[in-house]
Amino acid sequence: MHMHKLEKIWLTVGVSMLGVFLIVLGVGAFALGAQPPGDHASGHHREVVDPETVDQTAPFNEPGLKKIGDNEYDAYMLAFAFGYGPEKMEIPAGATVHFHMTSKDVVHGFQIPGTNVNMMVVPGEINHLTYKFTKPGEYLVLCNEYCGAAHEMMQTRIIVK
Ligand SMILES: [Cu+2]
Image 1: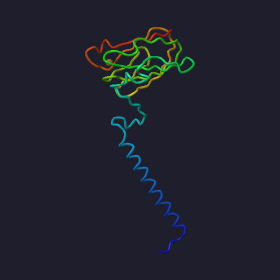
Image 2: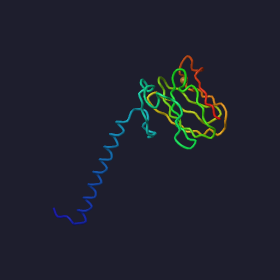
Image 3: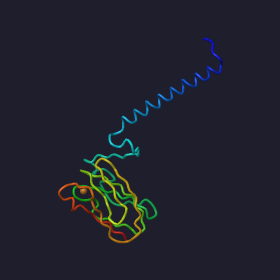
Image 4: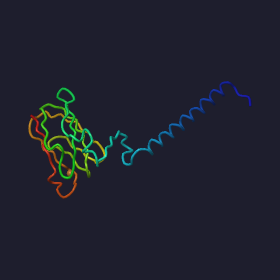
């Protein structure tokens, strides 16, 4: 079959584009299939951790504040029925705190009334939230996900001074 040079070029372009399209489709389907269930739509990245061993795994084996910059801290915290680790945290006023939290058992909450701090703490995942503590005082931390008999008692304190 005789073909013009231009036709040949277009045919090549067309076939390669189809190839690229099929590869993209295949890779996309594979990536989606490999993802754990539940979080497909949001697309944000998940950090996983084993809830059974998390309290023996760094950094959650020593929950608390770690200084990472000029009045900036990472706070590693564990939620469990019915409390939080560490029991108490002291934070300098004006500090920016990046919370990294996970649960040892069931889904808990992490809420500081009077602020916009409010997140779910899910076993098997590390959940993040950043807050700047500008006002000194005592901040109450509450669990706002019903987690069992002593749910109402589940709380901790953050002292900002
Ligand atoms: Cu709870």
